[in-house]
Image (cartoon, rainbow, N blue to C red; front, side, top):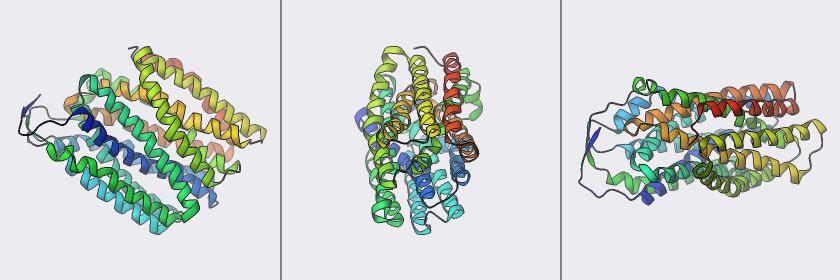
Length: 405
């Protein structure tokens, strides 16, 4: 329970969506660089696949952020006073920018120093994400919650288009240092609308609820959400950690992969996110999640066929890569995140939603390491074929734990 003491006009839902959308884009720029752009650059530099697979360890802060999410929420929502989301975003943003500038100076071949810097960036970005998710659920109640979900998923794909697409293009044309420095500068621009806008117009409040992990884990919705996240993420995206290296080994250049990632995320990903929102309202989250898993299984089997045949027609290969990594992923994750928001308690949404995302990150990290090992020792054909089977087997399991409506 919280009691507001109005001293300033509340921001409109449109202003909240626009401002938090910039933060979600910024977080996904970092993610696009880390998990899509950097693996392709390192493969282009000749690093082995099993070592590239270790990049998923950078997701460790995203997997463990539930440990400090209650402290972040208690700081963000003090018993009495203004919302402190703006301060968390400012500090986390500055740390992220400094970390990227350090990576720009190190270069992609300094493997462990780059991982160390990007892990610090991931810690800062994941902490900002706790505050941002809590702010979104808290300020977009009822019918406006869907707009927050659209900003989250749409911002993720727009940011991925920049971090995995534009970034690779800039690396090819201007080099590593200029490309990473440009991404760091972009983070500044993306954070300003939030910091100079709604973050400066918070209200005085009195709050009785104390955010805590125990309060979250006592709720059956949270336990169902954790199971849904683990099943879905393993089936949907674990094998795609090796998609960038696969395209490099298939003969595509960094610039071409950058265009594939950029066009896929910017056009196909955003369009699929909008379509996913409409389908969720029409069919319900359960049906959309199952549909996305079946479609992803088909795309993974197609990638396996390309790998096993040894023939890589550029056009069809690029189309399947965009479909699997952008279109189908966006379609399914709109439904998954809509389900997560519905299960989150607005009084401690930063804790509840964080638990779901941590399971996502933990499974992604483990799946990425396993995917690198399988690709290195058994080949891409076995990796994508096996992942397709997992996606088909996951469809009835996700139907059991998700909501019909």
